[in-house]
Image (cartoon, rainbow, N blue to C red; front, top):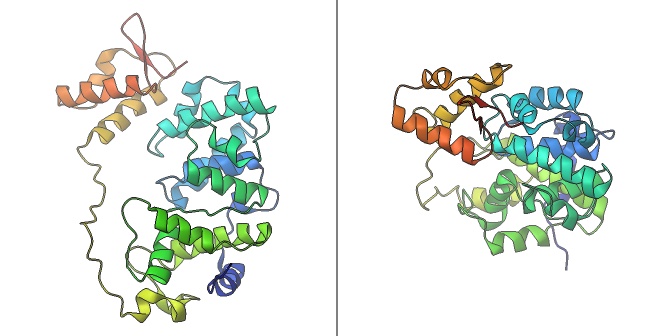
Length: 291
């Protein structure tokens, strides 16, 4: 039996507090929603917005992107981070053209079968682009539900079956309302029920929140370590890719060697880029983005 004590308050809050994001507008295409969801993986809206706008201006349809080499997707990705997402989007575009006539499929199963699309992204696109009824569990939603329903400050590091069951039990029965609920609770987590400084005074469900009513007990689970970047292989990979993005022709190995002094780490990072399909080593000893 459906029982969501939070939906009315959260939906009303969303009506007046939602950010005006282009991929949420009524005229947003399913492709634009898919692009936004892949870009937003582990990347904040403030960084995604200009990248999304540039991407959609250049490739407004899957066919537009599919017609270009995958290296152009990597180049356009610029510094959004985790550049394999660019290859995934390019592979998605080609699959959509080859298997779905150039139109993003509306079936959850077909979305889940697209390259690089996991359960969250498939549910999000089905909900936000096609108004379907799915439980959409991103980091923000998991945190809101952990606090409001479970009474703990943070959800487990890895998503659990109990979380999925809870999220599914809270999805409104009407598809259109369910899709609205999915984006509303996500927005609540992004703007109010934030990880470090939750604004409980502004929360529409503060009076129902189990964590707040329990006195906001501090997190007592495994240590939550933030991701580091400086000095990591990720930083080296980023510098190597930056050289290739800025080049109009293949570059010699010497042009890559100068970006990082430590040769073992530099070679390891370059080998990883090649293994991931983000860099092509050419027969003449030069390197380029994938063709």
